[in-house]
Length: 143
Image (cartoon, rainbow, N blue to C red; front, side):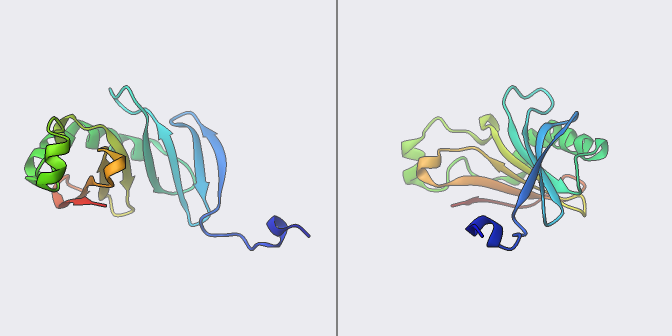
């Protein structure tokens, strides 16, 4: 028996599927799905994830509304454009409002987690916890 056949199924294992709303997506054993897809007016793919066996129209509507409201959410967060002065000196032109969205997670209760893109070689990236009514509950730079 090969090592692959001998391993128990991990809760982090997935199956790939196609769906008209997102294209290719992964269905995770723990009951989530995720996809790298283009949403709304964005011209680049982002990673999105939510509970359930597959994407649905209601979830996609919530993601679209979040993207539409994201500029006002970022401003309301009062998160600085840099985690440290050293980082700011290395990336003086970086602005949260101009950053690409890296990932969006929609939780069962309707809240979100948003991660914006930054400079991966520096490890820092801004993240936002957002309530179901699109209010920032936590905004911080993380590594």
